[in-house]
Length: 101
Figure (cartoon, rainbow, N blue to C red):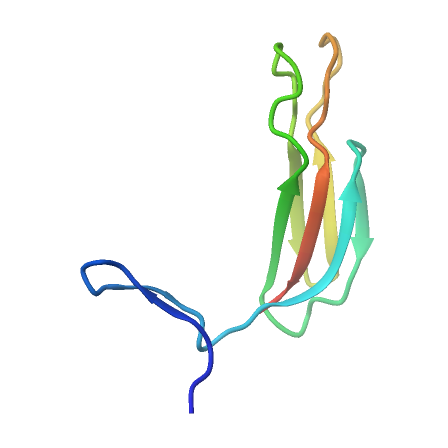
């Protein structure tokens, strides 16, 4: 017996089928605007990540670089674009989740 979630659109086309794979969260970290990395064993599946920002734009100049995320079987890392020479930069902060399917 299959278990999971299936969603169809109004035309009867299957748009989501989550009966075959279910992601497992392996970790989370709150990003504060600094570069970083976390070692995590992600070799037991297909790695994925999701970033949930605290905000999108903090002020009128829109100097809000988001994190650039890299993931592999050994862990996850993130960097922010250089804000050198920019007035009042506010890197996007938030929660970064990762795991495997």
